[in-house]
Image (cartoon, rainbow, N blue to C red; front, side, top):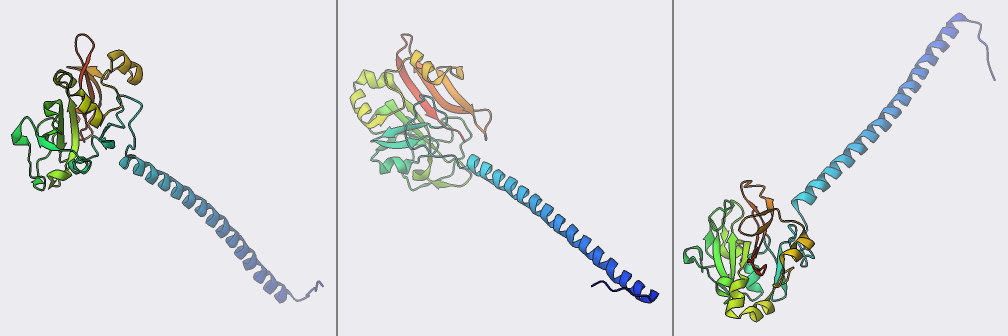
Length: 249
């Protein structure tokens, strides 16, 4: 029921009490809009930060290969098999090979072949083989299969914990000495020992460059003056005679 009041003082009081109520309502509505807007901004910012974290995490922790690649010169999967177990250049350690039954022997330069595998290795690899590397031969293959291990960071580590940075295979020696059967039984790569240059290009594209072999390479992040990847060698008759798989931090 609506009530009318004749006195002027009462009207003033009513008017005064109504205006703050309107102001309060406006402020509350404003706060509600502001809160919703802030929530949207915070949500968007959180999503952006989350996306950024996921991107960085993906870059810093790439997936470790679990099988040989279908691509002969796969720079994201520089793997081979020994005794049926997968090893990846730039990931696997000397201890990994030993655990798979490999016999590690002194390399061609015995000064770079520390046979006390528990000894601490402090040398820093600067990106150029064989300097700053531990050099060995594998499983009685002599100079046919050579392994190079490095300390990839500033922290000293035991020899057995050094990372495989290069495997070099001389197929001409393997064929000459007649030890191909033993080699094939123990070692497996993404490509066959009968590989031709045409097959290589058909599978992996044109080489990055040619220099004493056909290189499929990527420049090192830490040492931009050096690159690593694959080198395939063919003789004058297009016979596959050797290859290297390398990794530089």
